[in-house]
Amino acid sequence: SRLSQRHARLLVAAKGDLYLNGLSELSDDVANILGAHEHDLYLDGLQSLAPTAAEGLSACKGNLSLNGLTTIDDQTAASLSHHEGWLHLDGLSRMPRQVAHHLSQHKGTGLALNGLKSISESAKTCLLQYRGTLEVSGFVHDAVAELFRGRQHALDAPVEEALAEKASSTASDTLLSQ
Image 1 (cartoon, rainbow, N blue to C red):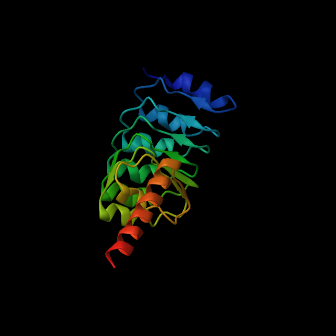
Image 2: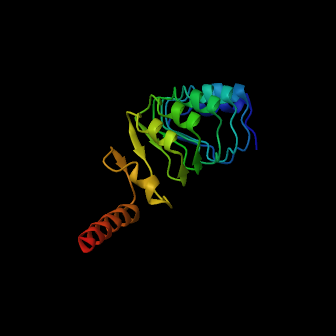
Image 3: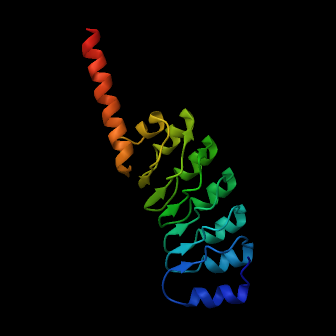
């Protein structure tokens, strides 16, 4: 569904968080209006987002949740990097280097990438440059989870346990081979 400019203005004038997860489309004009919102903005129903719409949304003062996006291009990532609150992109399962480069420059306090399943070495290097809190969980591959060990982050308990178990078994294997 879509949101009219008139209704967007009415919603932005209201105080409190906006849960607009039923929206499946967002025009640039409506994105610019929603960007004036001073509280959290949830748009998890969006499956695509144009760079110009992302630029409008990045002005939102609260946290911005775009968990319905499964891919974003580097221009959209560059636009979203201007956002100053938490940015939730839990729908992304892969992270191309250019997208990682732009997201590593995110001005906000936190970046949630809880759906990330694979990442290239060059993208890892880019994300390590991020100054805020990285929230990652649910990794299928230990190598991806290992990237965030020792950083200010939030890994879920099963991933931490799997990494600890792997480190313990590696240490045992090393001792047994000596």
